Length: 352
Ligand SMILES: [Zn+2]
Image 1 (cartoon, rainbow, N blue to C red):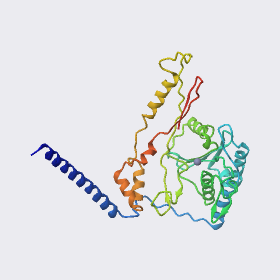
Image 2 (tube, protein in one colour):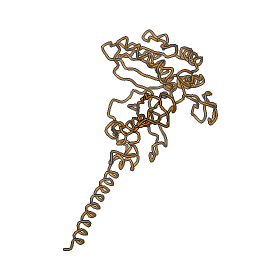
Image 3 (cartoon, protein in one colour):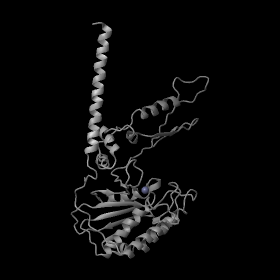
Image 4 (tube, helix red, strand yellow):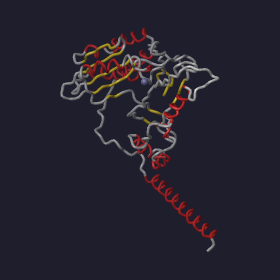
């Protein structure tokens, strides 16, 4: 056998094996696609108690949210917040939720002037308390581009429009209104819990949430869990899923800001040093870029989400089967943004 024919034979065998492998993969994907039942029920826990609201209570809830949206608690920066509106918001919740503020089982504290901490005393002190969080402030909303004025709380076609309806006054009002109505029904919780309402979440939370944390830490409070603002019910955002999807956020991507400084003796451009401060700093930035956090996609709670959605959209099964979807791995990547203060001693790097 000539050498050329031998190579051709080996190439053919390799191609055959490759085609065979691809065929098996496609068959497995199709099998999985068409055998996975839709509407799989993953959660098998106890049923949620049915809550019945009277139409009058529903109106109260709606009015409470509309009133909250109308108070422009805008945070522009850590230094620039609408303190008048934040103070007004404090007065507003006192007026709208009288039972919450007068109940003998609830202690209310104002923290850092505008944030609020509620301690709801449970009957069993041996149980670890939990905490519910929300925030009062909103990001700026210039009226351009809005169908309705952003701080009008206008109702249209069954929806209330305005800055904060989703993020996060709906949570603030929902939590307080639920507590108000439950107190009306003689609610006495077994387990204690806290409600923390921060006033500067949109611009860091350094004054609100951090001060609430400090206060709880100084009392030695240990929490069972924290429930913060979650994700919305999204309609048409997940491609291929025809029904609204209620996404449950179990974690939040963090961020870090690093200041990298290089100090070099000043010199003249006619006699440049072997290594300039910009060069040294560039190398540091490059090292940061080359060391992203590990991609953990597919091994966390998102696995359940994909399994659940797989029954709704067949392509999802394919993605799930492959587990590590390259597109989704973008979510894991660090985004680096930097600002160079050229010509100054300090070079500032922002890592978003
Ligand atoms: Zn928010």
